[in-house]
Every structure is written in structure tokens, then in C-alpha cells.
Amino acid sequence: MEGSAQPDRIVEIDLPKVAKSGLWITILTLVGLLVVKGFIDGGVSYSVTIWSFLFLMVGYVVLIVLHELIHLLGFRVFGKVPWRSMVIGMNLKLGIAYATTDRLMTNKAIQKALLLPFWTTGVVPAIIGLTIGNGVWLTLAALLIGGAAGDFAMYKELRKLPDDWLVKDDPQLPKLYLFKPGREIM
Image (cartoon, rainbow, N blue to C red; front, side, top):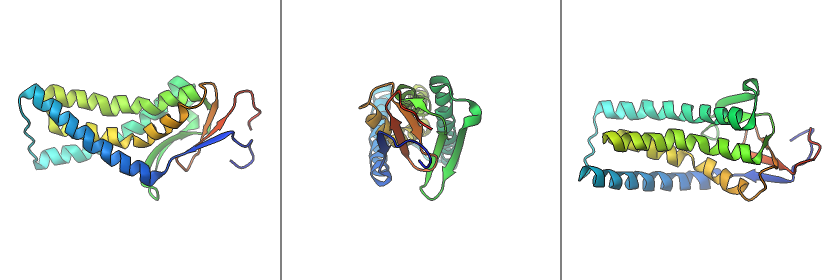
């Protein structure tokens, strides 16, 4: 945060810890979805073909990109951030996709923007998978729900602070800078 006011708080997530919890969330979600599918269909069958595997791989990449684009949509809708002030990308060194902005948002706005992709790229595929009885959709849902572990971790920390605090996203790290309202921030 060179050349700007010092934040009142910093929220930074521990990527190895988040990766571990994301794996557990993925496994538990998939098991839970398969159990629900079993109750709905009277049993569970899961066949793997080259086509289902290809659909899974392509679907996963598409949903990851969509996940990040939906963060940007959340920044726009909830934080009123102009499109030109948003960036989507991939940090290969950290192994993460990201969506970011250089604009300040309220804590309430960024909380909504953090959870929006969970609903659209996690819950919606789960509903599709359960409705049509397709294990690939259920697997995609579990992967994207587990992949939102970083979003959940940041959301959990942000919930501890008032809605009107201002939040600035770090452009390179999974870190948020928080400022009490009414402060002069450059």
C-alpha cells in the first residue's frame, strides 16, 4: 500500500490452509451431493467415459473463468465499480485465478461480491446435476464449491467488521486492506 494511508486492518488468507480446507469442502460436498442423488434416484451410479472426463475438464476451466467474471459482476452491481477499474487474471506462481479492482468498496458490497460466484458456479451446477441425475455436474459443483474456500475465508473475516468500513483489494495477493469510514484514503 505504498503512497496511501495505512489500513486499520488487513485480512490475509493462508493459501496452504485454504487449499486444505478447499479439498475437504470438495470431498464432503461431493459425498453429500451423491447421497442426495441416491435418495432422489433410489441409488447412485457413476460412469466415467472419455466424453464425461472431457466435459469435466472443459467445464471446470469454463466455470473457474465464470467464477472470476461473476466476482467482477458483483463488484459492479454491489460496489458500483466501473468496468474499466476491474481486472481478471491468473497468478501462476500462487496457482490461483483472481478478479480484482483498484477501487474502494464497502465491506457489505465486497462480502456480497465474494459469495456471488458460490451461488452461481457452485449451487446452480449442483441443482442441475441433481435435477438431471448427472454425476459430472455434481462433481463440477463440488469442485467449484470447494474452490470458493478462499472466498469463504475472506468473507468470514469481513463479517467481523461493520458493513460501512471501506475495503481495498490487493492487486497481487489474497489480501484485503480495511479502513474505518470517514478516513482520508489516497
